[in-house]
Length: 105
Image 1 (cartoon, rainbow, N blue to C red):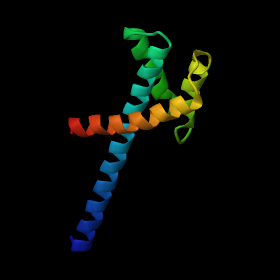
Image 2: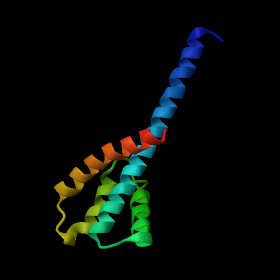
Image 3: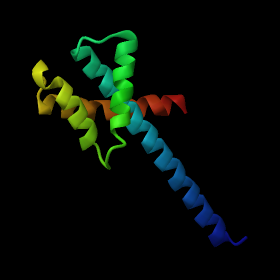
Image 4: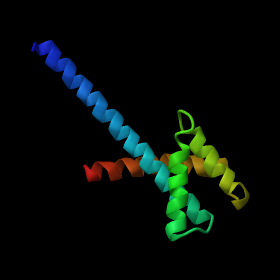
């Protein structure tokens, strides 16, 4: 194996690892967002966990995070939670999710 091939394989492995980590962070953010929204909806325990799973699954509808935003916004629309509130919470939780994933590594 040449040095070039070894470097290429190293870059590919790093890219794969980075993509897996990003997926985990986004999924964790979505779960945390779901738990936050569940609290706003008055859900607790198993109901809150089930709602959070629903939000995580909603991310597979289309690329990007708009599907997640729409799922939460649809449920919180009559609870006095604004678009800005949801988007700010999403931004805060992506940082929190990153910290949690890093701590688990």
